[in-house]
Length: 143
Image: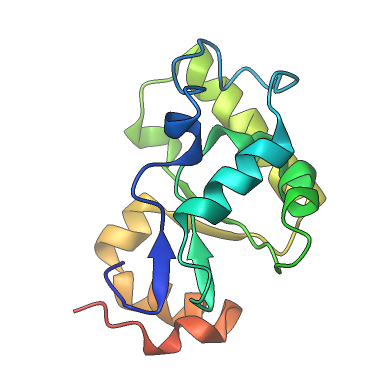
């Protein structure tokens, strides 16, 4: 986002731990993930002095309860960026990702969902709703 108050890792923990090369990482079976090691890698990469720590597009979103448990000192929240069905070509991989997102919404109904199309067409409205959901984002400069 470019705001100095928000820090995301230079490379996602999955990449650093070489988990990104594992095929079927969106399959829903994350039994191979060492959650403590992954959380420690993220904490090593993040500037934890920031009020918001951000990770984008990790497959571990499929196991939201494990993320919450892996970061016990933080208030873990989820934002899902989704595409409208009419704008994508459906594949088995897309169905796996969608099932993962449905799991997050079922377990964490307070998850903030952004449709990519709304972000492109009505970004001001999306931003207004986002800061209502997480007031710490109010000062983010999106210009």
